[in-house]
Every structure is written in C-alpha cells, then in structure tokens.
Length: 165
Image (cartoon, rainbow, N blue to C red):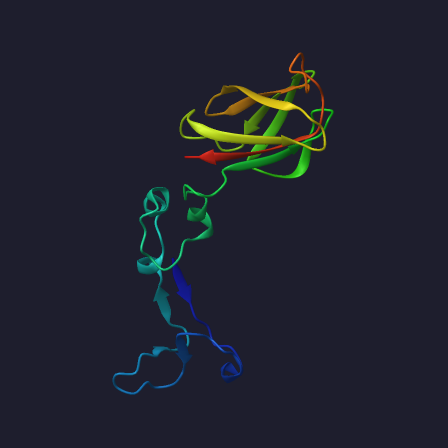
C-alpha cells in the first residue's frame, strides 16, 4: 500500500500523529518528516493474509481486505424471517433457499475453504431446536425443529459462521 501526500492548506491546524509536515526534525528526533508530494510505503507495517489466517502477525495493523482472514472473525451472519426469506442486512450470505417447513439452505457469497466450520443459530422468541444437517464449502442446511423435536416449524432465526475462508 502506498500513501501519497498532497499539499493541504493550513497543515498546522491538523493533529496528525507520528508525522510532521514541512518541518525539519532535530537530529535524534523520533518525528518522521514528510514533505508535500511525498510517498510513504506502508507495506512493511501491514499484516498479510497469511499472518491474519495464522494469527501470528506482528505487524502494526491489518487492512480491511485482510481482517476477514483472522480466525476469530465471523465469516458470515444472517437473519432469516419465519417465511424463510433473507432479512437484510447480512454478511457473506448470497441467498436463502427455503426447501420446506423449517428447512433452509444458507448459501455463502464467498465459499468457506473446507466443510469444517462452526455454525451457531438461535430462534427469535420461540422454543425450538436448530439442527445443522449439511455443511459444504458453499452452504449450510438447517432444520428448525419444534420444541417437542417431533417436526419442523417455521420461525425466524439468526445464524453466525466461524471458520477458515
């Protein structure tokens, strides 16, 4: 990543940590001097995808593009209406396929790297049991069982997915 610095009127009014614009630093001063129209290479302090995936990075910061690769970050979340429809907003969910009463497929926008991942779900106000019956890299299937576990039922549910993508 490269940052280009262009002249801005009245720079003295801005408090910019770690950088001082158009001034000279004394010998041994920890202040970094950046002149107008300078280029700063930030790649040495940004965490890579591999560092995020293994959670071993010692870089200063992740980027928006690499944050999703950290193992502790949700890879998808969704809220599904009682009618089986996708309720906005969501994250990384392309669609919901309502295949019958209480039976739904949640299809990812970006697939998981393997079928080994965790899903957690809850109903919105009803006493039900949510069963995950199929997981692939592209989707997971849920069945919403009634409180007696004797059949499926249509209720609103929410779900979150964690794993490697």
